[in-house]
Length: 272
Image (tube, rainbow, N blue to C red; front, top):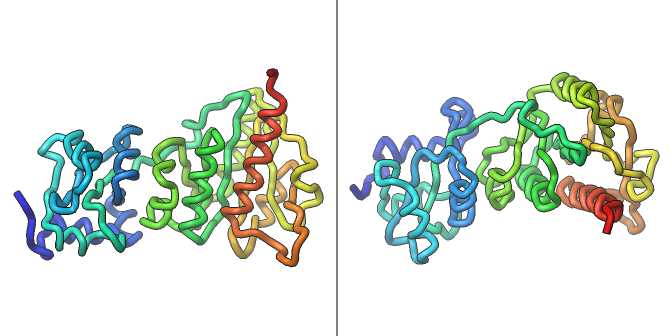
């Protein structure tokens, strides 16, 4: 059945999920666009409903996504109703309603090549999403998001991940204490974990540090950086050298530079 009313209860429910308080209450979020819906389905995420507007589906790729979901889990909207629901300037005609499934710290694999990126209290959804995407591209084991933080399921965050949100474990933590306990558990398991704090005032230049151990890289918030409690728990504090007039990079750019130096060192140490 094609829904043509803007006041349809199911449409109003979906629209409410643009607000963080309703995402938290309902434990669900929206994923919009062909690429993101494709990744959500391919990675086995908990897609409850596929919402689409037939008139806006202009590619075979989009049509194929609809066919992956049984009819009972599809919701068909008129194009104008879908456009009103969409968070995009140019809607692609497809949205997935996904159930939030929280990942515990215990789900992070304890591996010899452990590499976890910890995003500390970030406030910009684009930065958080870009860091998750970079971590995935670099082959990181997991991402940990320490709150209070921008919402992991904000539409801007989700879009900035380009689907990496579904590709690797992402753990949300309410406080630092849980992270400290996780450090200890990893070490008890026999891994010589190195905790690296990134800071503009770090005593070691990032490129001079040695990253040949299981590692957790801490990225601080855009304005305040890492809190003192996080710096105190780190084994080393590193900084990126700044040769020009600027004194810092934004969080996502800094994270990319930090992450890929670690990847470069690890690749160089592998036998050829």
